[in-house]
Length: 434
Image (cartoon, rainbow, N blue to C red; front, side):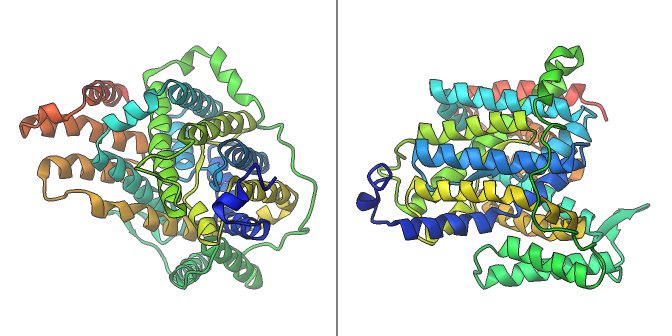
Protein backbone atom coordinates (compact mmCIF):
# COMPACT_ATOMS: atom_id res chain seq x y z
CA UNK A 1 0.00 0.00 0.00
CA UNK A 2 2.75 2.44 0.97
CA UNK A 3 4.67 1.61 -2.19
CA UNK A 4 1.63 2.01 -4.47
CA UNK A 5 0.79 5.45 -3.07
CA UNK A 6 4.50 6.44 -2.88
CA UNK A 7 4.48 7.34 0.80
CA UNK A 8 8.28 7.52 1.07
CA UNK A 9 8.77 9.62 -2.09
CA UNK A 10 6.12 12.11 -0.97
CA UNK A 11 7.18 12.15 2.67
CA UNK A 12 3.92 11.07 4.22
CA UNK A 13 2.47 8.38 6.49
CA UNK A 14 -0.79 6.56 7.22
CA UNK A 15 -1.52 8.90 10.13
CA UNK A 16 -0.93 11.98 7.99
CA UNK A 17 -3.09 10.70 5.14
CA UNK A 18 -5.94 9.60 7.44
CA UNK A 19 -5.99 13.00 9.14
CA UNK A 20 -5.94 14.70 5.73
CA UNK A 21 -8.79 12.56 4.41
CA UNK A 22 -10.87 13.15 7.54
CA UNK A 23 -10.25 16.90 7.36
CA UNK A 24 -11.40 17.02 3.73
CA UNK A 25 -14.54 15.07 4.59
CA UNK A 26 -15.47 17.40 7.43
CA UNK A 27 -14.91 20.42 5.20
CA UNK A 28 -17.25 19.15 2.47
CA UNK A 29 -19.71 16.99 4.46
CA UNK A 30 -22.29 19.77 4.15
CA UNK A 31 -23.00 18.55 0.60
CA UNK A 32 -24.68 15.47 2.08
CA UNK A 33 -27.49 17.69 3.36
CA UNK A 34 -27.38 20.64 0.96
CA UNK A 35 -27.50 18.57 -2.25
CA UNK A 36 -30.60 16.52 -1.30
CA UNK A 37 -32.31 19.72 -0.18
CA UNK A 38 -31.67 21.49 -3.50
CA UNK A 39 -32.47 18.54 -5.77
CA UNK A 40 -35.61 17.62 -3.83
CA UNK A 41 -37.05 20.97 -4.94
CA UNK A 42 -37.02 19.58 -8.48
CA UNK A 43 -39.39 16.79 -7.36
CA UNK A 44 -36.78 14.14 -6.60
CA UNK A 45 -36.99 11.93 -3.52
CA UNK A 46 -34.77 13.56 -0.88
CA UNK A 47 -33.70 10.32 0.81
CA UNK A 48 -32.80 8.69 -2.50
CA UNK A 49 -30.75 11.76 -3.47
CA UNK A 50 -28.95 11.51 -0.12
CA UNK A 51 -27.89 7.96 -0.99
CA UNK A 52 -26.92 8.97 -4.53
CA UNK A 53 -24.86 11.86 -3.13
CA UNK A 54 -22.97 9.66 -0.67
CA UNK A 55 -22.39 6.80 -3.13
CA UNK A 56 -21.31 8.97 -6.07
CA UNK A 57 -18.99 10.97 -3.80
CA UNK A 58 -17.44 7.78 -2.44
CA UNK A 59 -16.96 6.31 -5.92
CA UNK A 60 -15.45 9.57 -7.17
CA UNK A 61 -13.02 9.69 -4.24
CA UNK A 62 -12.03 6.04 -4.76
CA UNK A 63 -11.36 6.49 -8.49
CA UNK A 64 -9.45 9.73 -7.91
CA UNK A 65 -7.42 8.22 -5.09
CA UNK A 66 -6.62 4.82 -6.59
CA UNK A 67 -6.51 5.64 -10.33
CA UNK A 68 -5.22 9.24 -10.37
CA UNK A 69 -3.45 8.99 -6.96
CA UNK A 70 -4.36 12.56 -5.94
CA UNK A 71 -5.63 13.74 -2.51
CA UNK A 72 -8.60 15.32 -4.29
CA UNK A 73 -12.16 14.56 -3.16
CA UNK A 74 -15.23 14.66 -5.37
CA UNK A 75 -18.96 15.22 -4.76
CA UNK A 76 -21.98 16.74 -6.52
CA UNK A 77 -21.04 20.36 -7.16
CA UNK A 78 -22.80 23.39 -5.75
CA UNK A 79 -23.83 25.59 -8.65
CA UNK A 80 -24.28 22.57 -10.88
CA UNK A 81 -27.02 21.25 -8.61
CA UNK A 82 -28.56 24.74 -8.50
CA UNK A 83 -28.59 24.84 -12.29
CA UNK A 84 -30.10 21.34 -12.30
CA UNK A 85 -33.06 22.41 -10.15
CA UNK A 86 -33.59 26.09 -10.80
CA UNK A 87 -32.39 26.21 -14.40
CA UNK A 88 -33.31 22.96 -16.13
CA UNK A 89 -36.30 21.73 -14.09
CA UNK A 90 -37.96 24.80 -12.60
CA UNK A 91 -36.64 27.25 -15.22
CA UNK A 92 -37.37 25.34 -18.43
CA UNK A 93 -40.01 23.04 -17.02
CA UNK A 94 -38.19 19.82 -17.91
CA UNK A 95 -38.76 16.71 -15.76
CA UNK A 96 -35.92 15.90 -13.40
CA UNK A 97 -35.33 12.70 -15.37
CA UNK A 98 -34.37 14.91 -18.34
CA UNK A 99 -31.92 16.82 -16.16
CA UNK A 100 -30.27 13.57 -15.03
CA UNK A 101 -30.00 12.50 -18.67
CA UNK A 102 -28.35 15.86 -19.47
CA UNK A 103 -25.83 15.26 -16.69
CA UNK A 104 -25.08 11.78 -18.04
CA UNK A 105 -24.58 13.02 -21.62
CA UNK A 106 -22.40 15.96 -20.57
CA UNK A 107 -20.28 13.63 -18.43
CA UNK A 108 -19.95 11.20 -21.34
CA UNK A 109 -18.83 14.07 -23.59
CA UNK A 110 -16.39 15.14 -20.90
CA UNK A 111 -14.98 11.60 -20.80
CA UNK A 112 -14.59 11.44 -24.60
CA UNK A 113 -13.08 14.92 -24.84
CA UNK A 114 -10.55 14.03 -22.15
CA UNK A 115 -9.52 10.85 -23.96
CA UNK A 116 -9.12 12.66 -27.28
CA UNK A 117 -7.35 15.71 -25.89
CA UNK A 118 -10.04 18.07 -27.18
CA UNK A 119 -10.88 19.12 -23.64
CA UNK A 120 -7.76 21.26 -23.39
CA UNK A 121 -8.53 22.95 -26.72
CA UNK A 122 -12.05 23.90 -25.65
CA UNK A 123 -10.91 25.20 -22.28
CA UNK A 124 -8.06 27.17 -23.81
CA UNK A 125 -10.44 28.72 -26.37
CA UNK A 126 -12.50 30.34 -23.62
CA UNK A 127 -10.89 33.52 -22.24
CA UNK A 128 -9.87 33.59 -18.61
CA UNK A 129 -12.18 36.53 -17.87
CA UNK A 130 -15.26 34.55 -18.85
CA UNK A 131 -14.14 31.54 -16.83
CA UNK A 132 -13.71 33.74 -13.77
CA UNK A 133 -17.03 35.54 -14.27
CA UNK A 134 -18.89 32.23 -14.66
CA UNK A 135 -17.60 31.11 -11.26
CA UNK A 136 -18.45 34.45 -9.67
CA UNK A 137 -21.91 34.48 -11.24
CA UNK A 138 -22.67 31.02 -9.88
CA UNK A 139 -21.52 32.25 -6.47
CA UNK A 140 -23.96 35.18 -6.62
CA UNK A 141 -26.72 32.85 -7.79
CA UNK A 142 -26.11 30.40 -4.95
CA UNK A 143 -25.96 33.22 -2.38
CA UNK A 144 -29.24 34.64 -3.72
CA UNK A 145 -30.91 31.24 -3.36
CA UNK A 146 -29.64 31.07 0.21
CA UNK A 147 -30.91 34.57 1.06
CA UNK A 148 -34.35 33.75 -0.37
CA UNK A 149 -34.48 30.39 1.37
CA UNK A 150 -33.57 32.02 4.67
CA UNK A 151 -36.29 34.66 4.30
CA UNK A 152 -33.69 37.43 4.56
CA UNK A 153 -34.66 38.55 1.05
CA UNK A 154 -38.31 38.37 -0.03
CA UNK A 155 -40.46 39.32 -3.01
CA UNK A 156 -41.73 42.90 -3.19
CA UNK A 157 -44.60 44.15 -5.40
CA UNK A 158 -42.84 47.32 -6.57
CA UNK A 159 -39.13 46.87 -5.86
CA UNK A 160 -39.15 43.19 -6.89
CA UNK A 161 -37.03 42.34 -3.82
CA UNK A 162 -36.84 43.63 -0.26
CA UNK A 163 -35.44 42.63 3.10
CA UNK A 164 -37.61 40.14 4.97
CA UNK A 165 -38.98 40.19 8.49
CA UNK A 166 -35.83 39.70 10.54
CA UNK A 167 -37.85 39.12 13.70
CA UNK A 168 -39.25 35.81 12.44
CA UNK A 169 -37.79 32.83 14.37
CA UNK A 170 -36.77 30.88 11.24
CA UNK A 171 -35.06 33.95 9.77
CA UNK A 172 -33.23 34.55 13.05
CA UNK A 173 -32.08 30.92 13.01
CA UNK A 174 -30.56 31.40 9.54
CA UNK A 175 -28.86 34.62 10.66
CA UNK A 176 -27.40 32.70 13.59
CA UNK A 177 -26.10 30.11 11.12
CA UNK A 178 -24.45 32.78 8.97
CA UNK A 179 -22.69 34.29 11.99
CA UNK A 180 -21.64 30.85 13.23
CA UNK A 181 -20.06 29.83 9.92
CA UNK A 182 -18.41 33.23 9.36
CA UNK A 183 -16.88 33.22 12.85
CA UNK A 184 -15.58 29.67 12.42
CA UNK A 185 -14.11 30.44 8.99
CA UNK A 186 -12.44 33.65 10.17
CA UNK A 187 -10.88 31.60 12.96
CA UNK A 188 -9.72 29.03 10.34
CA UNK A 189 -11.63 26.18 11.96
CA UNK A 190 -11.54 23.10 9.75
CA UNK A 191 -14.95 22.01 8.57
CA UNK A 192 -16.41 25.43 9.42
CA UNK A 193 -19.37 25.16 7.06
CA UNK A 194 -20.36 21.69 8.29
CA UNK A 195 -19.87 22.58 11.97
CA UNK A 196 -21.86 25.78 11.49
CA UNK A 197 -24.76 23.83 10.01
CA UNK A 198 -24.67 21.37 12.92
CA UNK A 199 -24.73 24.22 15.44
CA UNK A 200 -27.65 25.84 13.60
CA UNK A 201 -29.61 22.59 13.65
CA UNK A 202 -28.91 22.11 17.37
CA UNK A 203 -30.06 25.64 18.20
CA UNK A 204 -33.16 25.07 16.05
CA UNK A 205 -34.02 21.93 18.02
CA UNK A 206 -33.40 23.65 21.37
CA UNK A 207 -35.92 26.38 20.50
CA UNK A 208 -38.38 23.93 18.90
CA UNK A 209 -37.88 25.45 15.44
CA UNK A 210 -36.70 22.11 14.09
CA UNK A 211 -38.16 18.73 14.95
CA UNK A 212 -35.73 16.46 16.77
CA UNK A 213 -35.00 13.26 14.77
CA UNK A 214 -36.42 10.04 16.19
CA UNK A 215 -33.15 8.20 15.57
CA UNK A 216 -29.54 8.79 14.59
CA UNK A 217 -28.61 5.54 12.87
CA UNK A 218 -30.59 3.45 10.39
CA UNK A 219 -30.18 1.35 7.29
CA UNK A 220 -29.57 3.45 4.13
CA UNK A 221 -32.80 4.64 2.43
CA UNK A 222 -33.95 3.08 -0.83
CA UNK A 223 -32.31 4.32 -4.02
CA UNK A 224 -35.19 3.00 -6.15
CA UNK A 225 -37.01 6.37 -6.62
CA UNK A 226 -34.08 7.79 -8.63
CA UNK A 227 -31.90 4.87 -9.74
CA UNK A 228 -31.75 4.52 -13.54
CA UNK A 229 -34.64 6.95 -14.12
CA UNK A 230 -32.57 9.05 -16.53
CA UNK A 231 -32.88 6.44 -19.28
CA UNK A 232 -36.60 7.15 -19.66
CA UNK A 233 -35.71 10.53 -21.18
CA UNK A 234 -33.98 8.98 -24.18
CA UNK A 235 -37.25 7.48 -25.40
CA UNK A 236 -39.09 10.81 -25.29
CA UNK A 237 -38.94 12.97 -28.47
CA UNK A 238 -39.46 16.11 -26.34
CA UNK A 239 -36.05 15.55 -24.78
CA UNK A 240 -34.32 16.45 -28.04
CA UNK A 241 -34.68 20.25 -28.07
CA UNK A 242 -32.39 23.31 -28.30
CA UNK A 243 -32.94 24.29 -24.64
CA UNK A 244 -31.95 20.78 -23.57
CA UNK A 245 -28.87 20.91 -25.82
CA UNK A 246 -27.91 24.19 -24.18
CA UNK A 247 -28.45 22.64 -20.75
CA UNK A 248 -26.07 19.82 -21.65
CA UNK A 249 -23.47 22.32 -22.86
CA UNK A 250 -23.87 24.36 -19.67
CA UNK A 251 -23.30 21.30 -17.48
CA UNK A 252 -20.23 20.56 -19.62
CA UNK A 253 -18.82 24.11 -19.49
CA UNK A 254 -19.32 24.65 -15.77
CA UNK A 255 -17.80 21.26 -14.97
CA UNK A 256 -14.86 22.13 -17.23
CA UNK A 257 -14.10 25.31 -15.35
CA UNK A 258 -14.86 23.98 -11.90
CA UNK A 259 -12.88 20.77 -12.18
CA UNK A 260 -9.86 22.15 -14.01
CA UNK A 261 -9.56 25.15 -11.69
CA UNK A 262 -9.93 23.08 -8.53
CA UNK A 263 -7.48 20.46 -9.76
CA UNK A 264 -4.77 23.03 -10.49
CA UNK A 265 -5.36 24.96 -7.25
CA UNK A 266 -5.09 21.90 -5.00
CA UNK A 267 -2.21 20.43 -7.01
CA UNK A 268 -0.27 23.69 -6.73
CA UNK A 269 -0.83 23.76 -2.98
CA UNK A 270 0.44 20.19 -2.65
CA UNK A 271 3.48 20.88 -4.87
CA UNK A 272 2.51 18.49 -7.68
CA UNK A 273 2.76 21.00 -10.54
CA UNK A 274 6.12 20.87 -12.34
CA UNK A 275 6.98 23.35 -15.15
CA UNK A 276 3.33 24.43 -15.27
CA UNK A 277 2.29 20.84 -16.00
CA UNK A 278 0.38 18.41 -13.82
CA UNK A 279 1.31 14.70 -13.97
CA UNK A 280 -1.63 12.34 -14.47
CA UNK A 281 -3.98 15.27 -15.23
CA UNK A 282 -5.86 13.12 -17.73
CA UNK A 283 -6.51 10.48 -15.07
CA UNK A 284 -7.87 13.09 -12.68
CA UNK A 285 -10.28 14.42 -15.31
CA UNK A 286 -11.37 10.90 -16.26
CA UNK A 287 -12.11 10.23 -12.57
CA UNK A 288 -14.43 13.24 -12.54
CA UNK A 289 -16.36 12.20 -15.67
CA UNK A 290 -16.81 8.56 -14.60
CA UNK A 291 -18.07 9.63 -11.16
CA UNK A 292 -20.56 11.99 -12.81
CA UNK A 293 -21.91 9.30 -15.12
CA UNK A 294 -22.35 6.91 -12.20
CA UNK A 295 -23.87 9.67 -10.07
CA UNK A 296 -26.47 10.51 -12.72
CA UNK A 297 -27.49 6.85 -12.90
CA UNK A 298 -27.91 6.73 -9.11
CA UNK A 299 -29.76 10.05 -9.12
CA UNK A 300 -27.69 13.17 -8.53
CA UNK A 301 -26.30 16.15 -10.42
CA UNK A 302 -22.76 16.50 -11.78
CA UNK A 303 -19.95 15.22 -9.55
CA UNK A 304 -16.86 17.40 -9.56
CA UNK A 305 -13.64 18.09 -7.67
CA UNK A 306 -13.98 20.02 -4.41
CA UNK A 307 -11.80 22.97 -3.45
CA UNK A 308 -12.33 21.86 0.17
CA UNK A 309 -9.71 19.22 -0.62
CA UNK A 310 -7.20 22.01 0.01
CA UNK A 311 -8.03 21.76 3.72
CA UNK A 312 -6.96 18.12 3.66
CA UNK A 313 -3.75 19.01 1.84
CA UNK A 314 -3.10 21.70 4.47
CA UNK A 315 -3.55 18.99 7.12
CA UNK A 316 -0.89 16.84 5.46
CA UNK A 317 -2.60 14.80 2.70
CA UNK A 318 -0.23 14.10 -0.18
CA UNK A 319 -1.45 10.89 -1.82
CA UNK A 320 -4.57 9.26 -3.16
CA UNK A 321 -4.86 7.28 0.07
CA UNK A 322 -6.37 10.40 1.68
CA UNK A 323 -9.11 10.41 -0.98
CA UNK A 324 -9.81 6.76 -0.24
CA UNK A 325 -10.27 7.67 3.43
CA UNK A 326 -12.69 10.45 2.46
CA UNK A 327 -14.61 8.02 0.26
CA UNK A 328 -14.95 5.51 3.11
CA UNK A 329 -16.35 8.25 5.33
CA UNK A 330 -18.97 9.09 2.69
CA UNK A 331 -20.06 5.44 2.70
CA UNK A 332 -20.21 5.47 6.50
CA UNK A 333 -22.46 8.54 6.30
CA UNK A 334 -25.11 6.41 4.55
CA UNK A 335 -26.16 5.06 7.95
CA UNK A 336 -26.95 8.52 9.35
CA UNK A 337 -29.91 9.34 7.08
CA UNK A 338 -32.39 10.05 9.95
CA UNK A 339 -30.40 13.19 10.68
CA UNK A 340 -31.69 14.60 7.38
CA UNK A 341 -34.96 15.48 9.10
CA UNK A 342 -33.24 18.38 10.86
CA UNK A 343 -32.01 19.85 7.59
CA UNK A 344 -34.39 22.70 6.83
CA UNK A 345 -33.98 25.76 4.65
CA UNK A 346 -32.84 27.70 7.70
CA UNK A 347 -29.96 25.22 8.13
CA UNK A 348 -28.79 25.02 4.51
CA UNK A 349 -29.22 28.71 3.63
CA UNK A 350 -26.19 29.95 5.64
CA UNK A 351 -23.96 27.41 3.88
CA UNK A 352 -25.15 28.58 0.45
CA UNK A 353 -24.54 32.22 1.32
CA UNK A 354 -21.02 31.64 2.65
CA UNK A 355 -20.05 29.38 -0.27
CA UNK A 356 -21.30 32.16 -2.56
CA UNK A 357 -18.89 34.54 -0.86
CA UNK A 358 -16.00 32.16 -1.56
CA UNK A 359 -16.93 31.78 -5.22
CA UNK A 360 -16.91 35.49 -6.07
CA UNK A 361 -13.30 35.89 -4.91
CA UNK A 362 -12.15 35.43 -8.52
CA UNK A 363 -13.57 38.84 -9.52
CA UNK A 364 -10.34 40.58 -8.53
CA UNK A 365 -8.49 38.88 -11.40
CA UNK A 366 -10.70 40.37 -14.15
CA UNK A 367 -9.41 43.43 -16.05
CA UNK A 368 -12.35 45.71 -15.27
CA UNK A 369 -10.67 48.79 -16.74
CA UNK A 370 -10.84 47.27 -20.23
CA UNK A 371 -14.43 47.87 -21.27
CA UNK A 372 -14.45 45.15 -23.93
CA UNK A 373 -13.61 42.69 -21.14
CA UNK A 374 -15.73 44.27 -18.42
CA UNK A 375 -19.03 44.16 -20.36
CA UNK A 376 -19.19 40.39 -21.11
CA UNK A 377 -17.73 39.57 -17.68
CA UNK A 378 -20.27 41.74 -15.89
CA UNK A 379 -23.22 40.45 -17.93
CA UNK A 380 -22.18 36.84 -17.42
CA UNK A 381 -22.05 37.39 -13.69
CA UNK A 382 -25.21 39.44 -13.07
CA UNK A 383 -27.52 37.71 -15.53
CA UNK A 384 -27.34 34.48 -13.54
CA UNK A 385 -29.04 35.76 -10.36
CA UNK A 386 -31.15 38.35 -12.22
CA UNK A 387 -32.68 35.79 -14.58
CA UNK A 388 -32.48 32.82 -12.23
CA UNK A 389 -30.55 30.90 -14.88
CA UNK A 390 -26.87 29.97 -15.01
CA UNK A 391 -27.28 29.03 -18.68
CA UNK A 392 -28.63 32.47 -19.57
CA UNK A 393 -25.67 34.17 -17.88
CA UNK A 394 -23.21 32.03 -19.83
CA UNK A 395 -25.14 32.59 -23.07
CA UNK A 396 -25.20 36.38 -22.73
CA UNK A 397 -21.53 36.60 -21.77
CA UNK A 398 -20.37 34.29 -24.55
CA UNK A 399 -22.46 36.28 -27.03
CA UNK A 400 -21.13 39.71 -25.99
CA UNK A 401 -17.46 38.75 -25.74
CA UNK A 402 -16.82 38.28 -29.49
CA UNK A 403 -18.94 41.36 -30.21
CA UNK A 404 -17.04 43.73 -27.91
CA UNK A 405 -13.67 42.32 -28.96
CA UNK A 406 -14.46 42.79 -32.66
CA UNK A 407 -15.67 46.35 -32.08
CA UNK A 408 -12.45 47.07 -30.18
CA UNK A 409 -10.37 45.81 -33.09
CA UNK A 410 -9.21 42.71 -31.26
CA UNK A 411 -11.04 40.14 -33.40
CA UNK A 412 -7.86 38.14 -34.05
CA UNK A 413 -7.47 37.56 -30.32
CA UNK A 414 -10.79 35.70 -30.17
CA UNK A 415 -10.52 31.96 -30.78
CA UNK A 416 -12.69 30.71 -33.64
CA UNK A 417 -14.44 28.33 -31.24
CA UNK A 418 -15.80 31.37 -29.38
CA UNK A 419 -17.59 32.52 -32.54
CA UNK A 420 -19.25 29.10 -32.81
CA UNK A 421 -20.29 29.35 -29.17
CA UNK A 422 -21.75 32.80 -29.85
CA UNK A 423 -23.95 31.43 -32.65
CA UNK A 424 -25.12 28.50 -30.51
CA UNK A 425 -26.04 30.76 -27.61
CA UNK A 426 -27.74 33.29 -29.90
CA UNK A 427 -30.01 30.48 -31.08
CA UNK A 428 -30.55 29.47 -27.46
CA UNK A 429 -31.58 32.96 -26.39
CA UNK A 430 -33.82 33.38 -29.45
CA UNK A 431 -35.63 30.09 -28.89
CA UNK A 432 -35.87 30.14 -25.09
CA UNK A 433 -39.27 31.12 -23.69
CA UNK A 434 -40.35 31.59 -20.10
